[in-house]
Length: 398
Image 1 (cartoon, rainbow, N blue to C red):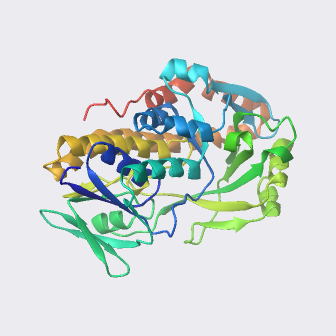
Image 2 (cartoon, rainbow, N blue to C red):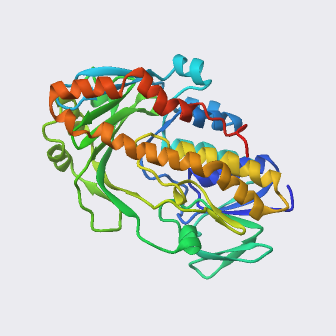
């Protein structure tokens, strides 16, 4: 190890990925997670080729493949008629075009793979029950402060503590997240209870006026991940998720195709989430402290890139720290310069997809067909996704 010690606040996907790539490059790391165990709230995650390129570089892709679900392709369906259009192939065609596949993964599996790899390099790197409340810094280091009155000091601090980041709040001021007006109903449905025509290894995106539904297989095809999102909702404040009933979800998606209703009826339960964001920051770093992932570029989940861009952050951040190991403030400036424009372009792209997924034209079947065939034809898809999937965090200029 180098004599540098990097502190990471947050033991989620971003924090563990950063810890792993730093340890692999002989930079000492400690991760501080507020929970009593490592866990990911949520269910499924889509990892596109740009994310799998990073995971392969970290040496964890092959193990993750054994836990993922083989998914043949993506398709678009119209909310009320069920008319279907192929979107793109997720297997061989994705590998031929981008070099890596597109995978659907259970979020806790990704966390498990990263945590095991971190602990294989440094068994005591991950510290649980460490609820941070803020930090202080000097010209020579950063001190992470915890709610129990203890603290720890290192050469630098990375805030990987998500949408409600205490590190962001200390850097730039505390404020509640911005509620988008959209709510998602999420469920894990046992595959064996679904009719055969729905129990397919395909990622499906239903688009409709004011809402959309996404579902795809997890757990080697044993589970179907279901996420339905609708506009025009209110939310009073934290907590930003709550349990909901099957009956309430059926009412929310009344009028949608019978296949959507069938999935909802077969769900054991639902967790309802308020979709929130944050204003763009002019900077992610001050001195020896920086942010990554949802702490600095939270996004609507409409490009399936939130976690993937966090993996990209991890690699670029490691490369910058390694390059400027004796000037960590300069390393953090280099990192944000390399990442900010791309990250904010992604956030804007995800927001733009709201109008494609929820367009009023979809209310009329004839207009809806014309809209889908215009917005989801192959040239348009390529312009929205090629710049994302072709990116290589390992070689991009820093």
